[in-house]
Length: 279
Picture 1 (cartoon, rainbow, N blue to C red):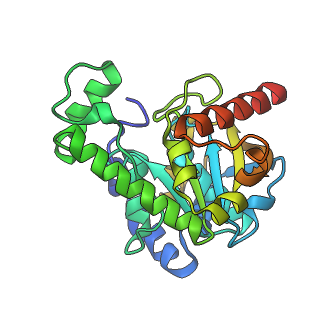
Picture 2 (picture 1 turned 135 degrees about the horizontal axis):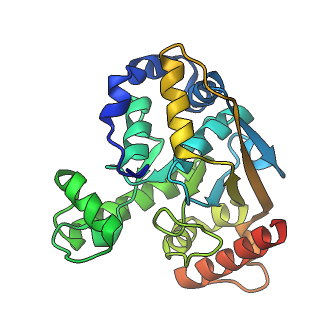
């Protein structure tokens, strides 16, 4: 069973939600998540410049890898460690990470930015094993057709832009699935989001590149569930590698981009260059 298809009932049966939600009400989602990881013996260490993650009210578009499926939760925990609670994360709203963020957030729905791949509409046929498995598991939560999918995603992208406009940090996973962002073609959502911003915000928005190392979804979830039962797990360390940070205005100063495809191609090339260099 993959991390994306792990049933949410596993977490509910462990009585995890009420405890974390209570803490969220006290300190906010990001800090509550970072505490949850720490209590489970999971350490998140930063490798690189974390200034964007330490500066509330600095608009940030964090672009990163989603190859293990848990990155939506890890970036929230990392944000809490850095002292920043104004974070929104993109996730499939019907899958595990989306449901967890939504459930932990309680009445505050500013953190989850749901995005649904176009091939997940129930009127679409075919697809690889992963697509078919998702449709079988989450059919009741999926849009009926592509028009509904586009409408839903457009609203979500508008919400993401509004959060950045308000000075928040928004995380987007540009491949559109559980893939390595350094080796997989990017979808144009990251470019669309950038071009949705007002010109002044566009110029001021920092692009923060990230990629996690040491992520074992099974070990992480086992450690969290065991910690809720008062049991200890073997400590584990996750490294959050951070690439160079530049504003969109700096990146496109010499060669302004006018289409989502142009923005996406430039940001992908810079991401691949950065993490090829770090490898």
